Length: 142
Image (cartoon, rainbow, N blue to C red; front, top):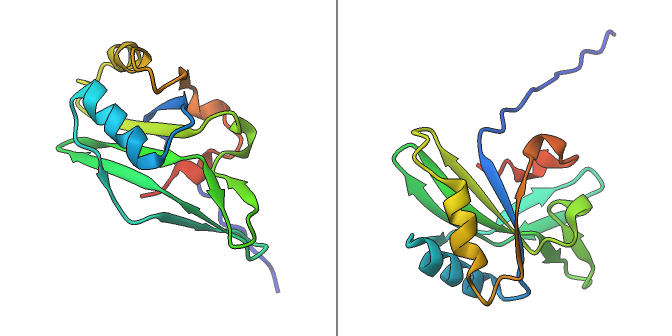
């Protein structure tokens, strides 16, 4: 029997910020809400299952917009055995990711970076190029 492979080409139509901020996820959402004057809300944890039967449970906060969304994802997760797993393993230094999609192009990412950099809780804010991330499929949580 002949086998066929399904090749899927995903679209990554969002901007991505990475944060170094060793604080709890609810505190990080609070900091972002205050800095950017938005209202991120806790949603159900995102679960990612791998082929080796391991799973990753990621804390997430989101705000839906008319033409997009802003989503905060925690990079680090601990399983039942206490092992650490990462949403984006090649960026272990990052504690959080902020995905921002705005199809109206009203969003000014540089103004967001400037506002977030002023926070004492955030050590570093970096704009990341999604296309250069090896495990970028893990960011497709919707």
